[in-house]
Amino acid sequence: MFSTFSKVSLGKVLSYSPEYVYSVDRLSTSKLISSLSDRSIKIFDLNSGSSVVELLTIKHTHDGNVEGVQIVDENSALTAGSDGVVKLWDFRTNKSTALFSKDDSDQPLLSLAYSSLTNEIAAGTELVAPDAGVIVWDIRKPNTHLRAYLDSHSDDVTSVAFHSSIRNLLLSGSTDGLVVKYDTTISDEDDAVMQVVNNGASIHSAGFLGDNMYALSHMETFSIYRPTNKHDETEEEDINNQPILFGDIREPWDCEYVVGVGKGYIAIGSNSSEKLSLIALRGETVSVKERIVLPGAHGEEVARAVLVDERNARIFSGGEDGKLKVWIADGNDHQQHWSEVKPDRKKKVKDKRFRPY
Image 1 (cartoon, rainbow, N blue to C red):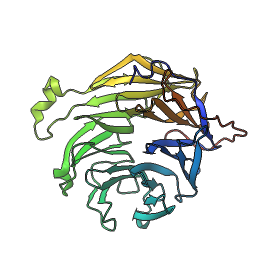
Image 2: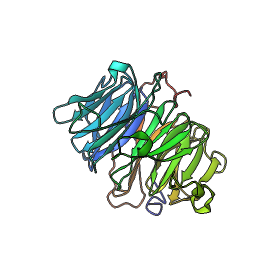
Image 3: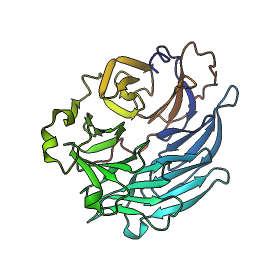
């Protein structure tokens, strides 16, 4: 990837909104999906000649903030809201089905994951006394949840993720500082928990890196945790199972915050220098010198989302400036020269990058 993007063109503005761009993902090879701070989701067509066409805008998707978007297939996606509802959207009909709701307990949802291996959905909840936890259910049988893990966390569950190739693995991260790995085939929570790590700081995001887990904190610390057996206390002394603690990454990585972790890279941002960069992540090694720099990026505003389309040699990003942008690798024979959208107005959105903890 880093050889492909050794040089990139100046970023083009594909779309502008006065709202924050929360997420950007690929719905299909030719379509993007994005969620915004006004609770809307947008679908864009990238195969429209000289411009990007906004195919669909669905407003007021939830009665609260959109806290997660997960792709099911090229025609459908899941969204989770702080209103406590998970919805399945069919973009052929522009209609949604409420698959799950925590309305009866007034428990907002803060994170969402979907596994195409098992058709399972997982959602992390906000702490509403006495519980905060992870709910798992089958997308084909949404009326009854499969599992409810409510004792592993004591605060908001800000991140959930399924393993991409192992069917039964799920992890969760919380503002209580814990990252927990579960075997979702087991209903009893004590038995289902396979590993618990104490990150020591509130979790912003967590996920799998092969067999390992990573954790990014709200304090901009980054850690990688190797798998252990919770029943074998001697493993705590095994050097091969010791975590890799990068600490506060802002100075060593020359950034001010981490946008997110992707396949083979970590996206980092700097408001003061107005740039967005991707640094190499290979297994347990972070190579800061291998860096793709996207100059200008989102100016002094925070970048919220990065999507790398290596196949078509392009990188998309969205930020709190309301812009969806694209960078194309110089020398790419298949460059698309989209027309740039010129923002004509902007308003400040009353929101924060991170939920207080």
